Image (cartoon, rainbow, N blue to C red; front, top):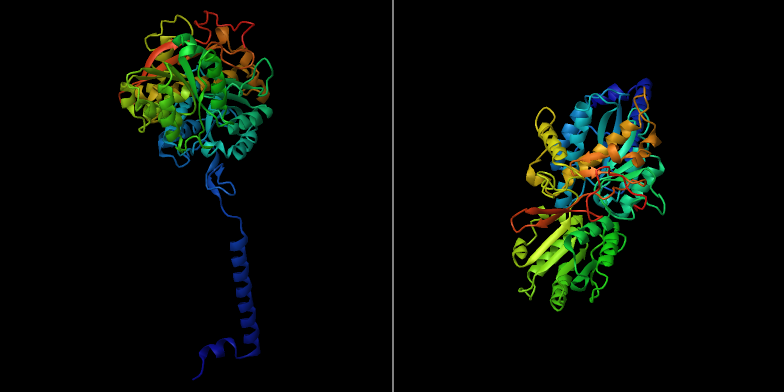
Length: 519
């Protein structure tokens, strides 16, 4: 049987040549295509400005276009930020970035991230729509540093490349956790002359001071751990001989390291050695510390202590409260005093709130609270005001609904951990610095000039924040900032305002000028 293809493709000499050339071309083309598929770089992009670094599946980078980094809690507020950014004209805005671990897997941290974005967006909207057309307008972008901030370097490198047009990055806010990674990120940003405004960093060693300014251009709106401890001591009038310290021995965590040092100074005169525990390298890991706390509570019952200072993160704090609630000496009352990590427990479902009905009182130094100035319950005539807080609530009402919003829950309960308030105040400080640094007749300030504004944020140039006055010393630290003392309540998600405390023992005077002896 004759093969018809043979007569079409391989019969004459000419057909043989043409067929051979075509076949060779197909083989070569297929080979190059296969090699190209094997050797072409893998597409690791997640969104414009966001990608997965080699060796990681996390999407890190910078976005102001509505990308929510795979976190549904951020979807609404990220979309609101994108809508606002879309109204801005190139060359007429300065960019402020929020540097945060947006991919955190810890439920409390995810809520914190949402509220940080809500507070910052509220101020972005006010700055662009309710400030008498001051310039420049403000563009807000989200800068993700990955889980536990471990991937901070590629994100910070990208931010450093955004200082020129079209982004014109002029400040970084957020900066919300006191960790080694955050300290390194702040160091790198300020070394590049980028102004940084920390929201909830409280570690004493991520700060400038009289002994030197390792982070030129850094400002903070939260008191240091030392100031929080001083405020608690003034408020509680603790008897050192009736107090003891429970402390995390894990080093390298700047929050626990500096809180431990601050509390150690408060319990001088105690008859008891500190009770020690060691958390995992990831403080959100439950580990086996619950077992340790069960033993520690036995030892606490052996003392006559009434006050327990706790130097540790919120997961371990929750474990300790649960263990103390199940202690053997139920007839004895104990008060636990700790830092602002206590605010995370308001939504912690693993907290045994029945412990709070068994003569266990838990109070912490909060960074802000909606009841602190709502009706001036603290009785302070200075240091903050009910009018400033009402203006903040009016702003939240505006941005929470269309066309600006929605941005997620912003009711009273959502404000009790102080995160929305603190993020708003930090963004207000950043916006004020950007605009004060803008020369007459110009639309943008020089990069380095923004961080040089901090020594002038005081007196009549203070920031009248929703969480209290922000008066900075020459090193960018808040002077005598209001510290709301908050108590965990037995009710679900209950965080009850107790009173305002002050690092100096009393409110600042009406001028709010740090004295020459201020640290």
